[in-house]
Each structure stands twice: as structure tokens, then as C-alpha cells.
Length: 453
Image (cartoon, rainbow, N blue to C red; front, side):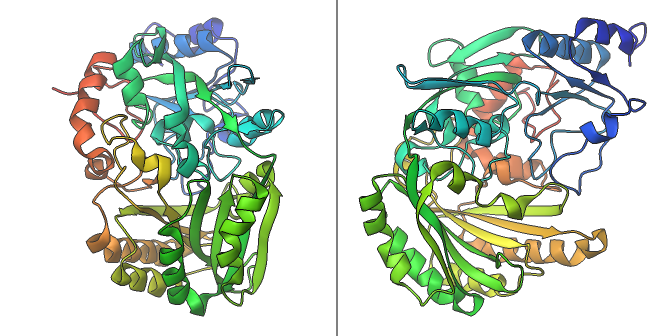
């Protein structure tokens, strides 16, 4: 690895496994969710706690190796692994502790949202998390954290109370509203640029165990009319209601559909009332909208996002769903290159928009909708036409966008200019925080913000 410091010395310092290319588990450990990603880190450290992370960071710094962090490994861009880098794998650090008296939950950096939700739901509690249960808590939170509960409780970062983070100098520090407040500001949306977050503490709220949610679907030919309905329906949606409109393949893979997917986290009576217009719109070809366990809703979409598929992802925030934007979305929704692909239109409202744009690193508080353009296929030979479709949707949406982008939805091939787009007016402040905590840009195997100066 480095002159005078063989890899065996690192193994002596950590309790977890240290994997290089010769190790029989190396190939499995370097795989991530996106099957397009085929990268070969110089070394993978499977950390078991803070001490292992500190040893790995110190070794990487002395060896001149950039550091990537793998939690759930669910990033569209595959930033958990990088050629020639050190990957610090937190997947053995999955503990979740819920304190129902303090209404907080402490979760380690390698846990998934499914694991977090399962423990919180023992007490009928929760906070905003991802809509795919296998997504890592760490990566999604550090980028902002869009989820079903965001209208009522804000993004995942809006529920964050404190973090423990191993910084580039190999120290573990706590960041919250009073201690290392500048770092805490930056970590709430600034992604993996500032250190290895080994523990997150969230404020939690009464949620479930039953919510009103699920899916209603119509034929893809109804895409434009359904978007008109969606624009009207979301205009006065209550905070408790999270709503997505999706163009994708049917659950049986036989046809393309237009689907409403939602979650009302209030009482079942209020949820039934709020979602009645969706059930009445139609006629639908599928109606699976009603009372459902919150944990079941949180894993409902897992089947469509299995690991190993080839994935190309583009995204854009929209100020609103104008008639022209609806035309573009419907036209491309009817032309999905395969049933696994999707266009997801996520409603941003309520508590998300009541937070000032400069209160956290996540600045996109002015957008009414977030559009994810997701091309998924299996045969690498199909890459060109899927990528061409995704880029065409993205380009045609540009006249209607805010110019911003959700950093968690940046994909393979997005360049530095798109990272700047993700932070807008907050970018320069983030670069200053980066200079203080990581002046040599050790943590650069990510959606990178170079240190100022």
C-alpha cells in the first residue's frame, strides 16, 4: 500500500477484515447496488466500530489513498467504491437504539432504513427515511433524505439531532447545533465530503403502525390526464400526505402504467378522506390503496430496485407542474425503453419548504416537485438506448427546472457543475467548511466539494 507500511500493519490495527484483491471476499465486497459499477478499490476495510474507522482513515491519509464510504451501497453513482481508493465499509455497524422517552433514535452508519424502521415501529415511532428499505441510512441522510413523511416532518436531515463523525485527521467528534455547528450544518445535505459519520441521532415522531397508503394505477395512455389530476390534487395536499406520480412497468411486467403512490401518516380516517379523490379518479386498472403497515409501505417498492441491475439516473427539481412540463413528462413516460424504467415525480411540500434555504446545506427548498429519471436494464448491450432516453427526458425538462438537483440523485457521468447545482448559494460556504475539516480532500471519492482555496 505505502512505502514501509505493508497492509499487514493495517490488519493489526483493526478488528474487522481488511480485503485486498487477493482476498476471496474482495469481489463480493466491492459490489454495489448499481450493476453498471465495476470498480476496484486498493483496499476495503470492514469496520466494526469507531476504532477501526480511525485506523483506516489514518492509514489512508498516510498512504495518500482517497477514501470512499460504503453504508448501504445504494448510490446511483456508485460512490461507495472507487478505483485505487480505500473503501471503509460500515455494513457491520448496523445497531439501532430507540429511546421512546426522549423521542430519539440512535443508528449506526451501516444500517438500512428497513432496519431503522423495524426498531422504531416497535414503539409506533419513526422519522423521514428512504422509500426503498435496503437504502442505507447514512448516504440518504447526508444528501438530504426525501421520503414519505417529509411533508409532515421535513427531510431526514431536518430530524437530525447530532452525529458522531471521524474526520480526516483521525479524530472522532460530535457535531450538533452547538458543538462543531459549522460541520453539523454542512453534513445536513453535504453528502460524504466531511468525514465518516459512524452514528446518527434522529428526533422521532408517532408514525403508524398502520398508515393509509399504497398504489393506484391507470393505463399509460392516461398519463397526461393523470398528471393534470396530480397537479390539482397536490395543490392543497395536507402535510401528512406524501405523494408520487410514476410512469413505469406494471407489477407483472406486462405493460406500462401510470401510477399514484402515496402515504398518509395521520389517522386512518383522515387518510381515507384525503386519498378518496385518488380512489375515485379513473377508472383504475389496479387499486391497492388503503390501510397498510408502515414497514410494509416502506418496502413496497423494493422489488423494482433489486441490486445488480444496470442503472442510469438523471434528475431535476421543478418549481411547479406547468402544462408544458406535463406534456414533456407524459410524452416520455409513454416511451419508456423497458418496463423496469421509470419517471418518478415526487411532491415537495409542507415542512420541507418551511426550512430556510441556508439553514442546512440542502438548499432546494423552493421546488414543488423532484423528478427522478431512472433507466434500468439487465443486458449491458442495451445501455445506449436506455441512456439516450434518460438524457432526452432530462434535456426536455430543463426549461421548467429550478436549475438545482438532489445530490442523492446524481448519477454516473454527472460532472462537477452538477455538484454545484445541487448546492446553489450554499456551495461556497460548504467549500469553506471542507477546508477546515478536510483541507487535503481525503474524502473526495464522492460527489466532491473541493476545499476552498
